[in-house]
Figure 1 (cartoon, rainbow, N blue to C red):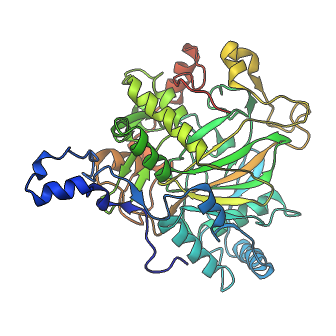
Figure 2 (cartoon, helix red, strand yellow):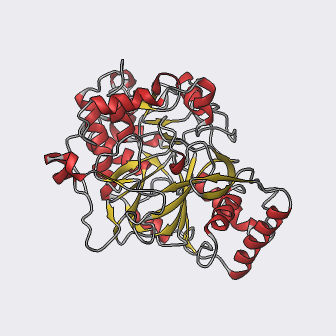
Figure 3 (cartoon, rainbow, N blue to C red):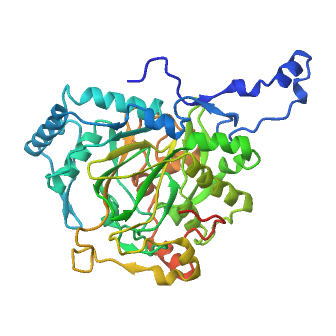
Length: 453
């Protein structure tokens, strides 16, 4: 576990005390200093942050919690916990041809002395450390997929409360809508997804709408499909250094699509809590899609530029890797972004390129049968399992109406996020978004100036 005196990401108020400002204070000229920008929601000064959350790639790769290997006794304990759950009331739900656990809990999935110390160390790292944990050898090989899913969800319940996943109001059960175990795979191919389907396109750095996201590799793509993770805190710090006038744009509310009332919600893309911890909620594609909805607030050029720079800076400081079978990671969405490159399911297939899509987007779109028919890849193609979590030790969020609306609760350790808050506010009709995307000549990421690969 992290030592008791380990520094967490916090506001470095010393950054305000330049030599000039110290001299001014001594001379009674403090009022002449340039004002420091502050968070509109918490009043925290927008100054550089320090601590393990502000990591660079070398820092993450050196972390003992990034790339761990489970021991044989730990794997045996996981299988024993699943056997216990199956004989003590585990219920299943059939979703898209696969049974997934419907009522898994840490009581049902009873862990012991082999795994519980690991869980405690992971929880500390996720909340007060880098915000990123990886295990390389989660049991996948020679294990039925439904058991892999149950092992995965069961282990996750010891880190937090699983939350229902969502798909921007489009109710795609195949991608995890309204269940605790989602599957990340291509339902179509091309750069611009349609009707909420998942594609094999490039996906920018983003967060999911939960405190912690976890992804488990089941099958890798034949080509491409690299995962990327980057510190949101490091991106913010570099934005402050190089583009200080644009940083406040990221702290203002920006609309993005969601399943609640009206189909969209506005929230800051970045923020700093009163306790000095970072929080972020950003998804460039969801922001772009919100612009298609009736009554949306048009984004100004500086806000679009700031979002573009988040990706540009993030790619410079990201760790890139391919999720092989059994590789699983957990990321604190408040301080770590994740993304992916485009992929192909055969050596002969060409992964989608935005340069090609910009010329003729329609030519790159192809639907994929999800019923195991011959038109689908022989091995099923790239597949990840996904869990959304609300950790037991999560940080308090800004006590602001927009945060309470989207998260459901802002108290530290409270179950929050996921689909549940949207349901509580009254779900929007998925047709609102579908019609908006049908009626517009929607070119994915067409809102932004920069293209990445």
